[in-house]
Image (cartoon, rainbow, N blue to C red; front, side):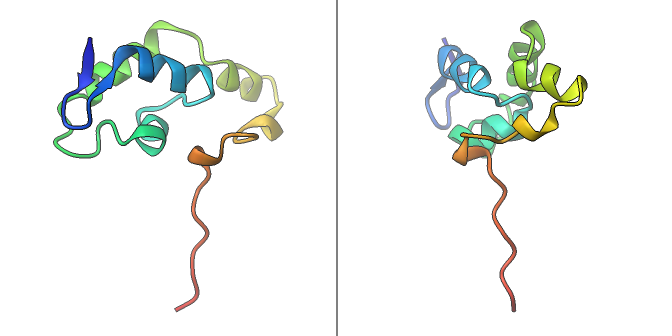
Length: 83
């Protein structure tokens, strides 16, 4: 079933990004653009993320925050550029 009709993103794709470490709607948006156009799917994405545990969040809660972002370039924050 489609979650984001603006970009054609399915529930399965959201789950796959979550399995790879995207734990928030913002991280899902960074990975696949879902939720970045009309925003109508953000609550659905939140619901999907809330149904399953996020392995990366659990590791961070245990103090293993160095694993956050490792191996997931799509979730990396861009570096600010000098003006």
